[in-house]
Amino acid sequence: MEKELKSHIAENLRKHRVLRGYTQEYIAEFLGKKDYTAYSRYEQGRSNLKMEDAIKLAELYQVDVQDLISVSPTIAGNVEGGSSNGHHISVLVELDGSNEKLENNIKRLKKINELMSKEEL
Image (cartoon, rainbow, N blue to C red; front, side, top):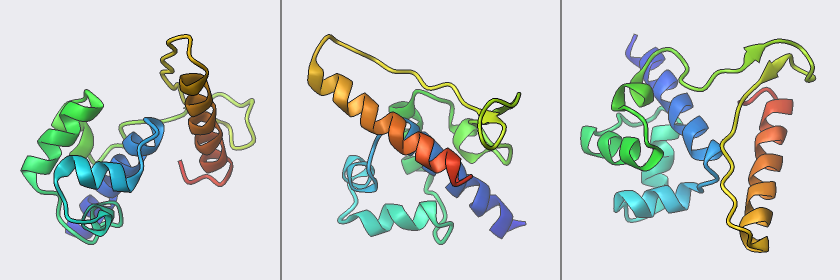
């Protein structure tokens, strides 16, 4: 069961990070890790998520800690058809009128779409 739980936590962490357009490097720095591999092990299910890191990440992602450690996926697609894999997700996009913000959101949406097409999200 522990391996399965780690796998679910890893999936939740990755989905929240990708949907918000953060890199593993950014998250590792945010958590005060020396390099990104310490955080990467969380997403690979190779390390147990520390409670203090879970709390920081929950604040960053504006979710409850339970959403990060839940066995049920916290970000799920609706099975409605219309896309190649039959799943949809909703993504919050913030715009401020700047081209930089727009371009960053376009890159993030393309990455999410790519992951969905590979059924990795």
